[in-house]
Amino acid sequence: MTPTQLDQLHHAGRLLAQGANQAAVQELQTLYEQTDDFAVNRELTRALLAVEQYGTALTIANEQRAAYLASADLQEQLLTIELANHGFIRARQLAWQLPAPRQGAAQAQIADAEATLKAQAPQTLHTRLQHFYHLGDGGLLAQQRRFAEALRLPLAEFIQGSRFVLRDPFVKPLVKSTVVQSLVQLKVDQELTMLWLDDHEYPFTPAACLPLEAMPVVQAGYAELAKRFANSDPLTYQARLQTFNLHLALLYPFVDKAMIDPGRWIDEMSQPHQGPAATPTEQTIRRWQRRLNAQLAQLGL
Image (cartoon, rainbow, N blue to C red; front, side, top):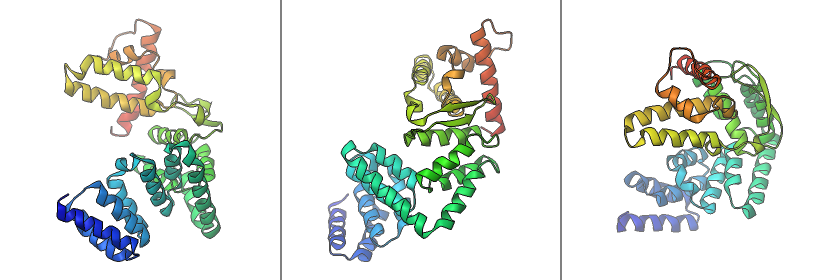
């Protein structure tokens, strides 16, 4: 920021401190049009909260969302913005990222906000939950929109809906994987059942699942891809990495049921073989990659 812009930022901060919230919003909005400095973003979202422009505050915060994860104070500010927009699930995910001494107060704040909405707008919550139950209706984009709406459910209702969604054969595997990843981030310590890609149901407890990027088989696959292509052929590396990430998204949380040998998995991705597989491992990997690639083709990916 220029010295003049910095003075404007400080002046807007004084307006906020004095309770002149609307004047602060106007000054900060003008300043934000001139610079995308995060300090302006942060103060603008504070001012927008003060004048109850909650949706705009979330839109502005999302433009630099990663910056809000830099400190506990900023995470709590983002959590407050999410709660103002009934973003209970994202708020709980943020709460788990806070330092342990702050987590209890944050979870209590979220529980209070959930209870308030349940008391004041039960029909709104009922409608959101019904939409979540019917997540399997429509194509991928429609399902993704309904899932985004489900993130505005309280935790208990989100888990309740997830139990149904994960066993629904019409929910796209990519969307199911997103539901599972959300439950893992929420550290849900309850057993759920998922109808997986092989048409079998498997129980799992989200709190006991590793995040996707922390799974040893996933880390081994990334390392193998990087070793083979990152330096020698960057374009091929990016293309293979995109395909690999889509495979992982489809397979989670049971990646290691299919990716039984990460090196061989990368072999088959790089040079698909048409002839008979030489080993049971190759047979398994080819069968799974054909299944995954067919799923991706159906989605136009």
